[in-house]
Image (cartoon, rainbow, N blue to C red):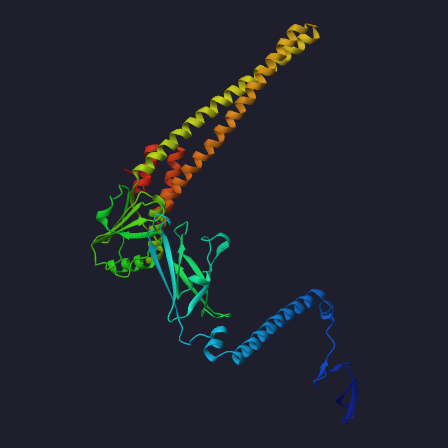
Length: 440
């Protein structure tokens, strides 16, 4: 195809010059005409990229299938509308009132003889429509990260209750897809929404008089007012709607739905907060949650967990025992190794002197000594495995003591605890865990 250009000659006159440029002209059956310029040299390798073409074809095929499915649905709706009364046709097509809303609520269920205690998600509609199915996507709660509730046709209603049991105290986003329609519907409207499960949803509010207060505690002071603490409680626990927490001083009591353990949170007018629980991990989670909510950078606490510290003391005693056993076994192996060398020399001397009886006795001693070495090696391996397990428990105890603090006090506690372990000063270790410092 030609293209006209205007050029100036040396004499200053203009002249027309024809420049030829190759183009591809395509005309479709609908009469649409398109022109295509040749690609640049650097694009020549990409124009014939088969993977790009295959991806494009696959994407277009998927769009085609979706459009065909949508078209088929429209055709079926049109047939149903012609062959059925108005209300029945709308029900089959999944048409629901425009003002239909989906309500969700989270609460605590204390369980019964057939079902363990759990957190409960209630989903309901705002009218007489029914819930046909619910899909829940949540990380760390359900097997395969998803859960489907599909009631039988005889148990359909406008509300549904779903038990939720998070294994750990972490906030979880519940992504919900709810199918809503009528009993006669063959197609359903899908509501999509997200609801967050609070961090401490597995704790039920109880009366302080109904349970004994735990002896273990964590005590610290913050500069936040009591109403802000109440806001934190509402965001992190599933409190009943009729809960009315007055200004400081006040205390709240919770019962764990997992093991029945008690949790007390007390707040004084001075800003002093006391957390009573025998679960040191729970105490650390609460402190870290408060520090994040109130933007606390450094927090020193006083803590005492008598039962846990006594178990840790037993673990430390076992660590010393395992070290002693390890040293004894190492000394026995060194002694047996020297004895093996001596027996080998004696056995070879007896063989060279053709004293077969003595040679046989020496090799029998070597056989028995080798069995003892193998037996000692197995004991040493088991001792090493138990030692590693106990050292891991000690390291976890140090990390738990650190999680009771925030910022610089946390790092100081971890460092001081490791120094106490290194110097084998058990009393200093427990002092650091309790008050956060090694100085008296």
